[in-house]
Picture 1 (cartoon, rainbow, N blue to C red):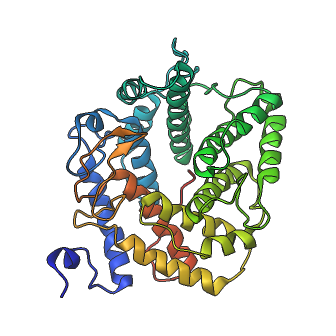
Picture 2: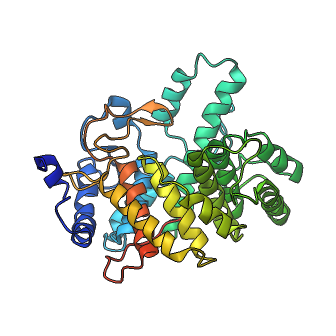
Length: 378
């Protein structure tokens, strides 16, 4: 017999009814995360928020903008509410570089996050490694902020400059990551591709084509033709293969480059279901969604896999109306900084990831009666 929590999660509802009800409830969930009297500031979860989690703001607002786009609630906001969200994200951008070399000019800096990272990396093996860790986090935050602004037709106040400005520098940057762990390497490479493709960096604009061409050639050379994934050295496990491919495919999307080996990548993805984490679920959905733009390879198998993903997504849904990054447990850290105690409630990151995954899965299944969700670019 199902317990009360199982019933509250809607597992007795037919799947189509559950999808309709869940999508209808999500705008109410995001409203519950708003900080009182601040229309563009959000908490990371509905309960169990730690002091540092409450102090951080930039990433949550950027994620909330993406969720509003997915749900179609962005257009239903008042002009003042939309301006508040854009203004909040822009307010984190710094014009000058940091004296500690943690970031260059134009970076988006959330001071409580950086302060926490400085403390947590104080025992790094070397000062260079500490700077690199913080710098990479700031670059990732800046990329997310800029992508969220672009998503709603806005732009940052300044050009983000902390990027290599030559062909040799771009090549060295991409080759400096450990592509035997393609999830991590792909995330940094994707940030570079997205920022260069959207007109950022210190190089003159006339050099952009050369730099972007270098990124495209690097990804083509990195392609493993057997799996359709992107890595070097021994073949990684299935999770890293798919997650790393997802990061590269987001970069290819910003570069206007088609997926290089979509049939092989579909075969690789379909070989196993992802693990039950928000990132793993959305990465599998994204890889299949992007590959399906180019091929009908194994269409029936893709639909069956998408239905299995839908069942997995459903397990992350909670009575508070949102999704948790883990089943029955909110996301506990952000760039390694503790933000919640991990209570059985929904969190903003898990909700964005799994709503986005839901949007792509419904498209892969091809249900004409499914609710219409928007699409975002990471």
